[in-house]
Image 1 (cartoon, one colour):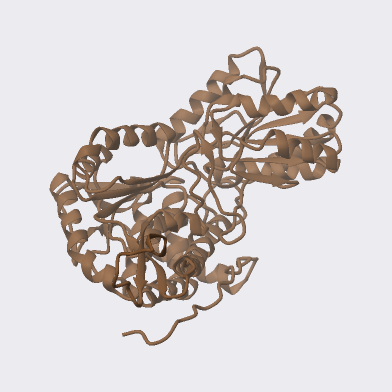
Image 2: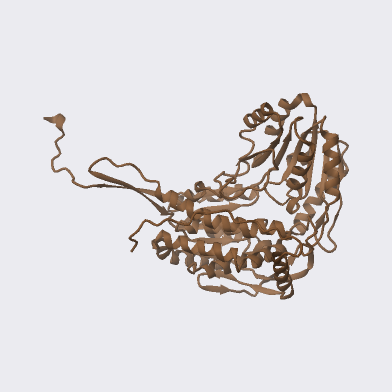
Length: 542
């Protein structure tokens, strides 16, 4: 029994380590990287209740930067495993939901400290190997952002619980925030280890139970996440990890009476299909499911003639090409004024041509490999298309090679057509398209930015003219859920820039903020009257 109102530790953003030359953190991480690489191949089970489940159907997991090297095998499951995961989750639900909130909080606070300490190298090394992230990209994702999710979400949880109604004399009004009835389905992408963990952890923190399907190309890191949860004391069955084909999982999950919510990050097309599937089954659910999704982006950088050329060039080179552009927030279209274009181009091209590309094990490589053959072929097809078009030219990159790893040179396209295909469609790779506009058409170009894409995830304005900034802020109000002034459109930090977009980019339920956690609870109002009346007659009847 709790006999105190507990105050959780004040969250502070995890410090990003530098991994500079000869630093202890670089040496330690690279040693773990080589250890994991040399232990290959490993067998990665499904986590269903207290059981680690294997099957006869083994699927290889390879390194994107060396696709002949098999890191391990995951166990391909089927519908029976999905059903078992649901039953395990429901069996764990009563005890987990009844656990005092501070005990749930303690599990994830412990997970944060374990990740900041003994699990840091393990999580970062796994992410470098399996998702081809360089040391810095792995650090800010797999370590720091996930630590921040755990710590700040605990604070947000307590803030939600503390939101209470007023009470008049003679009564006590209360709100309790119940976990949803049933189970949550978490469907997660390859590109951010932190997102994969948070999409299952956030509902669980609020007392829910979860069936989690990670992307195949993220399963190697997902195992480390499950090991972290186990080490932190998360009870068996609260989060169950299944490795099955998406349609197989969907058929079982979306037809189950106890399906209570979807927590999703992935493509817009998949999300829309899942929403349709849920709608088609709406009559059979116990409650209306909560649907939370962050999907695609066609993120912009809008530049005014008052901007600094070097600042623009750096925002573009970092924003477009870090992690090979495989971020929902990556800069993929830019609008640059004619007067600044020559200066920006000179600096930008020099920066991009100085990039080194290769394995994350070589820390001098700024760019690594894209995730797999399917992504490689898609991105390459866009580059091939550009080479055939008269209204576009390639000024950096434009080449690719998958003989050893899935390497695509950071590619920059300049087009005279503001509705050129690569200005409109999400590519999800190291491809940036630039449109150069006349300086006197700034206002018209803002309208073009707003109207070009179906997405509204991130975007930025770079300018020193405050009137220009204000105009962009107003005209692009609905064009981006995360809007950056004088910065690249990537790099949202938990507790500082809650992340999410609208339009075709998702439901904008802001990961890294209390509004996301609110989606995983159902409030109940309780009114207690201390001295109830004993006569039905009101004074007006006298």
